[in-house]
Structure formats: structure tokens, C-alpha cells
Image (cartoon, rainbow, N blue to C red; front, side):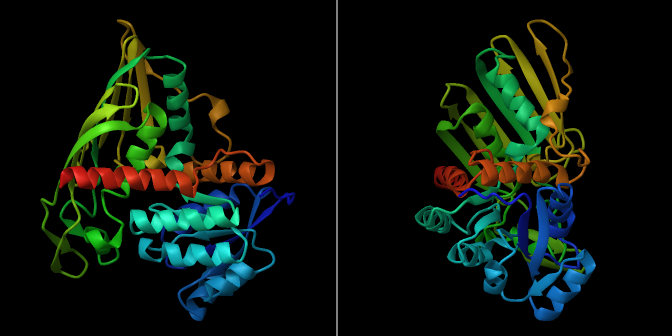
Length: 362
């Protein structure tokens, strides 16, 4: 589907006046490109909540009915930014209305749900984008090109140590406690680890074979703002070892607990050198990483991201940065029939990989 419209109208499901990911990242990402996107409407949990959110964010149209938002004549792209169990139902409103859709990752609350969502978009031949924005982050696009262009030579091995952090480290808030429940589809495995392994596969190739261990070491979680504890079922320790399609050996370990020195460390070792990727958070999808590298016997030196990888004037340290670059890719795909932004099909592949890991851990 190609559009001739210079400015794409966006309707957001889940934009609240109380904050949240849509307000923190989606709104500033879209508004960083007023020549490409305009937020024309939103859908809230109630009519009152929608109107309050519209006033807070300066959005003209507000409704509590997702079908009404999707059918709005000025909405070209429906953005779904709510909890995972509602993704399939809400994305369906956009597809039924013949509109393009951008749905946050994880795509569905299971592999089966994600496959059905992708099949529905394909049947309708509608653009369907997935929130795997790590692929769009400037530093990670640069990293991919470095590997492809042979900076390290043939990749021999790679290892990652990362931290999921709050709320998988034994303490949560009332608002985030649901992610410690494995049935919600929003867990440390699917969110920080899921984003990370999608980016790794995109840069280095998928897994040919693997072994895995999943464990829940914080079986009781303190809900700090309510002064009570709850049982946790989602894994807070994830270890995966295997061989990539290129033959490179990979070792990945994510844990809930944080350590300032190693909240994220990724080594890529090759025949001609190495690249080290470091960050203060295990949430690689934000693209907040530092790159250093060496070739031969050189010492590690900083690898600054060239200016050509920055396509949007957002703050590189902000949460909107990687997402803004993802929206830039979405715009190009809608306008020019390119294939730059991650799609529902890409999300299904990542869901399948996580399902493999769960089976291997059993």
C-alpha cells in the first residue's frame, strides 16, 4: 500500500494523560517529524479519559471506541500501545477498517496470536508494522553495517550479559507488577530479552541450534507502593547458548538483578578484530549503547556513530530516539513501497525464536 499524502494521519490507542509509553516515546517521536506525521486522534479506556488525554496532548479527536478511531477519515495509521493481551483485538479494528497499523512488541500474547495477526494483515494486503525499534536505532544500524562490511572479519563468537532490572529484580510497583506474571505475555523474556535477541539475529543471523535455561529466582515480589508481596511466575534468569546460522557460537545471559558495571555488555569476536557494545540498561531497543572496537592487535577505541545514521532530530539519549527512527522507516515504506521497518512477519519470526527457547528450557 502506497500513499501520496505528504503528512500521514496517526490515531493512537492507549495514549493517556497519566503518562506511559505512548506519551513518553510515541508522541515526541511522531512530533519530531511534523512534515511527515500528524497525531489526529486517540482512543482511551473511557470517554472521559480520552477527552482528558486529548486536552493534555493537544489532539483534536478523542473516542473510547477503537473502531471509531480506526474508521476516522483522517487516520491513515493506527498505533496500538496498550498491554499485550489486547493487541490482537485492537489491531484487528485497524485492519478491518483498511488502515495501516503499528503494534507494539510483543505482537501477541502467544506465538499463535502473533501468527493470526500477521495472517490477517497479509490477507488484507495492508501494511502492518511491529515495534521492534532496536533495528532502527542509529547505533545498532551502524553496528550491523560494521559487521557486514567486515570490521571484525568472520564472526567467531558472541556473548551478551544483560539485566532486565526493575521490576524483575524482586521489587515492582502496582503499575508494573503484571509483568511478573508469565500469562500476560509481557515478561523479561519477551520484552528486554526479546528485543535484544531480535536485534542480535538481525545483525549476526538466527540460531541454527540452541540450548536454554529459564528460572524464576525472585518467586516473591514486593509491590513497593502497596506494601504487599505477590507471587511471580515469569522467569528472571534466562540463559541461552547455541550456534548461529553463520557458525558463530553465541552465549546469552539475562538476569533481573542489576549491576551498574554490567547491565549490558555485548562482545562480538571475529578473525580480524572485535566490537564491544556497552550500555547502562538491558533494554537494547532504546539504542542507548556505546561502541568500541579494535582490529588486529590494536587497543579498543571508540566507534562514533556517523552523522548519516541520524535521520531525525531527536535526543540520542531520549526514549523517543530509536522509535522516531522506526517511524521514519514506516513513513518511507508507506510513501515509497520500501521495506525498511520491522513488520508483523518479523515479529512472528521473533516469537518463534522465543518459543524455541521456552521449549528448549523445558
